[in-house]
Amino acid sequence: MKVDSGKKGLVINLLSLIGLVVLWHLLVILARENIFNIPFIRLRDVPTPVETWYALIGSLFTKTYGPALTVGILEHTQASLLRVIEGGIIAFIIGVPLGIGIGYSKPIGNVLNPIIEIVRNMPPMAWIPLAVFILVAGGSIFIVFIGTVFPIILNTIHGVKSTDLRLIDAAKTLGASGSQMITKVIIPSAFPSIIAGLRIGLGVGWMAIVAAEMVIRSPIGLGYFIWNMGELGRYPEMVAGMIVIGVIGYIMNISILLLQKRFVKWVD
Amino acid sequence: MGRLILKDISKKFNDFLALENVNFEVEDGEFVCLLGPSGCGKTTILRLAAGLDSPTDGEIFLDGKKIAGTNKECGFVFQEYALFPWRTAKGNIEFGPQVKGCSKEECERISRHYIDLVGLRGFEDHFPHELSGGMKQRVGIARAYANKPKLLLMDEPFGALDAQTRNIMQAELLRIWEKEHISVLFVTHSVDEAVYLADRVVVMSARPGTVKEIFGINLPRPRIRTSPEANALRDAILRSLGSEIKRAASI
Image 1 (cartoon, each protein chain N blue to C red):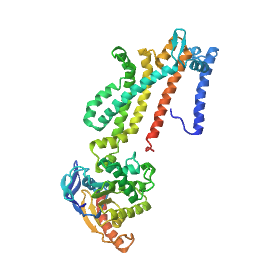
Image 2: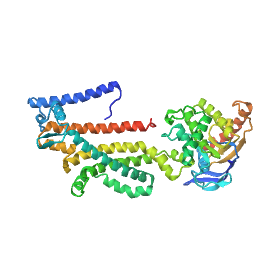
Image 3: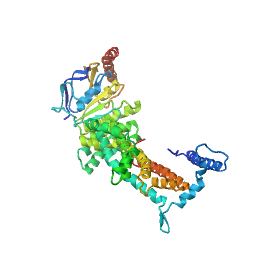
Image 4: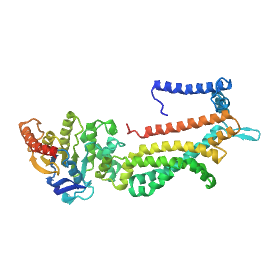
């Protein structure tokens, strides 16, 4: 989602969100009053926006009730984010050099392309059983890695391959060696693409981590939280968790866009 | 320093014969314009001289050294500027010195000299997309000069500029050239430009490209673009070129 930067745009953006909340509230209330219901959906069980809001506020922090400990949403969020960041960093460290190699050298591309083409078509969720049954540790980080690394590789390849040939000629006549060509021309030229890959990759990684946490049943993480709340019938908390997932994903996306704007000043 | 010799140069791209038996020289410190109908291989000659391509037949020498592989002793100025968009004007100019391993102070000193020479003072920290076409090409010229080349190869460097800017840049180029005195091989399709700039004009024939006629321009600089002598030369060159353009169109 791209938020319009104009003042008028901002107002419409806000109205659109408010409209969604109002529609949500109306649908739930109408269902509860038996006035209108969508078949096959138990709309009456859906919490209203207000109930969800109180559930969110009430479960933000970790609390203890006697011997029982309830982990707060903030702590779940932190755990999930940490996994995405760890998996993302590993994916970046491995994906960028691979992408540069494949994009720059035909032989490397010929060797690695078929592998990448098959493996990247296995969705991160398809790797969850392997992470559960075979990996000893770091299963959810591994799932994030799988989701993040391919967008990074593919965008890096694209960036490397779309380097302007005239810039390569110019660098040659200015005396650049082969390795200088990579560090001083290819990588800077591909940089915006690489960052775009990171952005898309982290988006996929964020979706993957939520799914992984549900299945892997690590006792902490937003995926675990919403699944657990659902099982306990605490739907307001469940929906609050879903909204937090959406908002965090959005913030991640925007942060990288802002970082890119800050560091890549040379793109019009 | 800076004597370029093209000896019996031919260039084939697959089955297409682009250049055939091209012979000419650029003397030390000389300004030579290469003129010809489009598609006659002018740019190919520059690429061969830069070592970005190799000839199918024949040899090219710069100061007696045969060119094989990229010729790092020549500066190339491109029509579309080919500036590194992620580097500022100053960063572009320092590219050559940097890859040669000059110290930071040395790079600074070189870039400051050429920024002043081409009139970019105040624009050092601008990125290429923030500069006008004329300014971009000033950066392109400074970048080529900063590498201390023996020969400057210019591929229609002012082709993308409007007429007024073009005239200014031509005068600027001559001013810089007279200061630095490096040989120049300048490709253009403008007879006006060639007569204004060059010591000699090499007129090429079309497909396969070869040297048709060489005109010496012995007019004192700064030249008056509309002087009778300039007009007469323009006329002679246009006639020589005109038959080639007709021939090129009929091929």
